[in-house]
Length: 157
Image: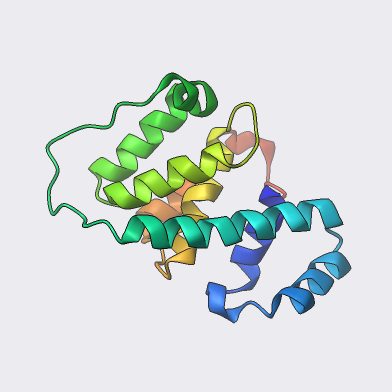
């Protein structure tokens, strides 16, 4: 699923630049993605849109002095590195509290036993992409930073 999401991000500048669902499915199949992965990714994106609309109706506080407490299920799924990364993004004002909640909800919906930091970065990127927000240079570098620089270029799909 995550390879399909990265492909969509790399191929289409904005979500509205994607072709209609049937044409997109054919294109993704032609590129070599399996039908199951395509269905999961497109379903995940549809749910992302619904979650974004539901949570965006809530007012965003201009400045929050509170902090987010993660429940055990979230900690188990995300792990400390991912929670720390989310906190870094929010403290650097690269995402707001609503976007943080969307990221967490979409991570929980990914149907994984644990989300790696690399997959969480893809989720953050897709949340911003779906909202038509392009990450600035700092966040873009951080989202695509390879943890093992000696491994050579990373294959995204």
